[in-house]
Amino acid sequence: MASNNYSTVSQSQKRALLISGIAELKVNCSDVQLDQLLSYLNMLEHWNKAYNLTAIRDPLEMIKLHLLDSLAISPLLQGARFIDVGTGAGLPGIPLAIINPEKHFTLLDSNGKKTRFLFQAKIELGLSNINEVNKRVEQFAPEHMYDAVLSRAFSSLSDMVINCQHLLADGGWFLAMKGRLEQSELSAIPKGYKVVQEYPIAVPKVDGQRHLVKIVRI
View (cartoon, rainbow, N blue to C red):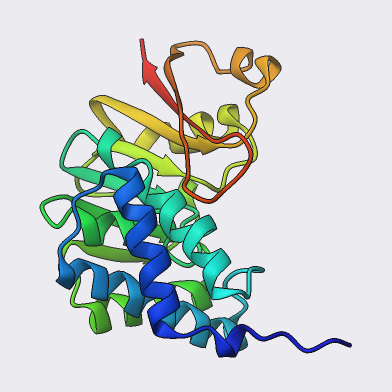
């Protein structure tokens, strides 16, 4: 089996790719936030060896497909309280929390290993605007509802709406990160909800379609 050369990727290579991508996205990012994003990436690489947090092993691909993909929706966030459902290793929640310190993010996942990683990331990165929850979404009853439910994880928009509708505050909305959009999936949204916007998302250095779908209660 051919060995990979992921370990030879330097910190300067990672930093250069991340700086370039963030500039292309036109997202405001301080030096401190850039360091936090790179520290998160290094944690993801390290923990991934034992916890299998992501199938992507190449750190440069992690930057493109995880960090930049998450940050691409930052300009579209409205509100103060967000929940990232099925967050896994904290995507898109942790990169968004780093870039938006004034907003609060709940990171929800049913996998205990992944939420242990999220807890450690919160501590090591000094993120006071996130909390991790180890529950299935249908079992989670928050004290305060959310302005938006975020997810990259749901297989279908209808599943996301059905399973997460109890989390939405009045006037709140779903923000679903999707690849290719099929009309059949859009038309399967449950009654009482509708798609109000489909934002095409251009992720730097990544080919293929990406969309952010906004769904509201009617």
